[in-house]
Length: 285
Image 1 (spheres, rainbow, N blue to C red):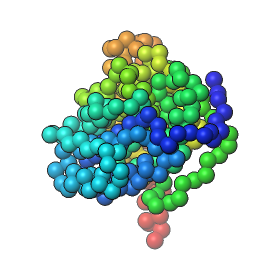
Image 2: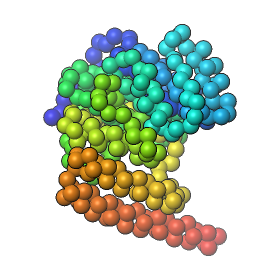
Image 3: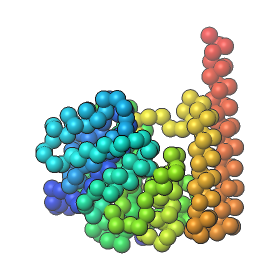
């Protein structure tokens, strides 16, 4: 199913809780919150969860909250570091609105993100999770213009067998869903949750626009093979967990492993070519 979106007349606040896990993010959190405050349709509340940073992050969060209307930003201080899953779950537990929208403390949203996602949900109330595209961009740049037509497309469960189509800063979901982030996972914990939702029969969708910016390099940039290997292992654990829960079949699991092997070989080849190219430029000097 595909729906066309046009700019509607909307209320000033949406029944959305923005959830932002924070760990030693004093240098980036102001920009993240500013992108929330710049929304054409504001979330009703912003939950900043300090994951026991141990530096000046918590003080920075309280100072930042004082710059905005009273009560709009709520600070949650966790007593021990538990990783992004625990931090997001803590925000989920304190949220009071119908939907949660996730943002990481070093990323930013495009101004119409909440507006467009809320409009898509109004057009199709059966959607339980809605996401969109993201882009990796330098900080401080003006948002790119949207490209027409703006569309929302339903994402089926089989799409989740290939890879994660829902970057965390793009996701908005229903607060009443009977799932949470698995706190045993510190990598790809987001993919496990999205897959549980999709494979359990809930309706998921994605807008064809980049409505969030990631201000960090993607995995594999600079030859980060250690990160790639850790992500591969975590992805395998997610697949094992989904099969254990009965959400994917043994045949589907075999298919995902085959696809993963092909992708891994391609990634290793690209890293090798990048290394050869870099060494070649060095010896040409």
